[in-house]
View 1: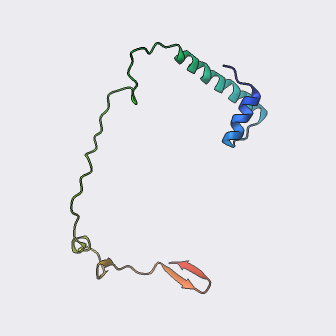
View 2: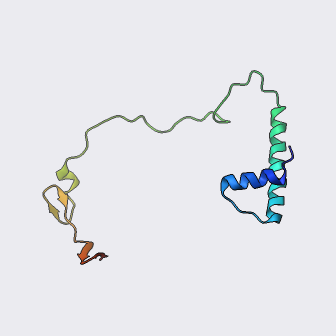
View 3: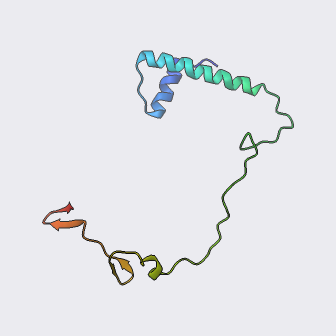
Length: 104
């Protein structure tokens, strides 16, 4: 399928991309070549071929999510340099100064 320059201009406008006239011609040729490849794929006999999501038989290596109890707040905070109740205490990194906030 051969695309026209107007087709490519329309695609570029939809993608919000600007091309020079030379780039439009290059894109016209390249997109037309891609569409030719798709028409070749349309001619392939796929009768009896199961649709797949992947070309090879892949399996998930992830374990299923299973809920389990977490660690206690005390254990989580055991190595905190400073703590206050069940929180890690850190020095202030933001300080208000009038109309603005400064980062330290």
